[in-house]
Image (cartoon, rainbow, N blue to C red):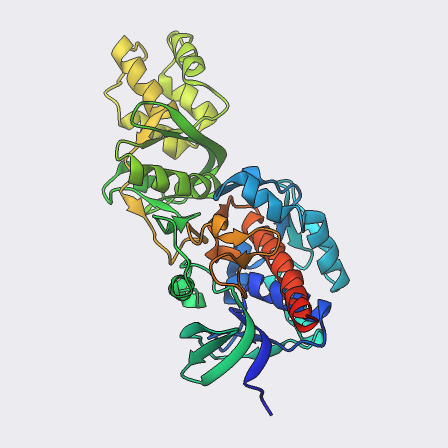
Length: 415
């Protein structure tokens, strides 16, 4: 018979929710841990991560790879469960990870299903009570317990964990409802919630769309309206029919979108030849002699791109005027990208913004505003670069909350 009164109820069975459930149930096997999720099939976000391979973590994880809350706050959680502990955790579940040249760690099977199955098995072995599809519509604190409701009925719990995810990839179930639940329990949200690790768009008629499919290393630089360089990312860059994607674009996207909200004059420039500065490229042009500028471009860029970039100028011969040289230098090494927008939450890998970490006890991730409530994963105001960092936040925050929540119940019951 299904019990409607439990010790711990975790809302959301994604990476952070599963991790929380596993550690809570392991640490206190006598406590009834229930995991609620609205999906018929669990782990949709895990399965699509890393192109279906699941980038579990990165070989070196520090708070420097994250944004949102202060890095000091983020590091307090990350240090409790680091990348080496993640590797060991999955090893104990029979999953070996491999490190690629980029520092990213993937399962040796190259299948995200391996990671999801390991998490589900670990949770089942720990006797976590799975209840899905059971979407949680409301969570209310009444006296010393919580009342959780949905169209499936009502559940009472002594402790609750919100692990619903943010707004990214809403078809996976993370449609932002978790923010409503958190606010209903007394929490605030950061002033902005916006897509992060998201492709950026260019005007439909922009000439770069003719280069759709080309991938090359490039440096993206973010500039304030006062011409201060705020961020730079050098990595693989993909030109698409809608604009730009690839690691460099995804990494810079959250910083661009955040800065743009505060300063509309914020701009993004690209250097298509990252190993050469503007000054070096100009010197190379001066040294061409009677050679055509296209010959220099072909040394560094795909033929189609070299030809199209040169076509955007009024350069016809080998002898460049000072103005033509300046025009080409800017086009190649500091081209101002006319970003028109982004592809939104359907294509974003994570949500920027959320519940401020200042509202949580960082030793436990228990709410300072609603005792007995814990918040983990993407709901928090924490988002990382691509490379497994966001998963590491999920593992670490789930570990901290999972270990703490059972202890809190033990302390209460022995008083």
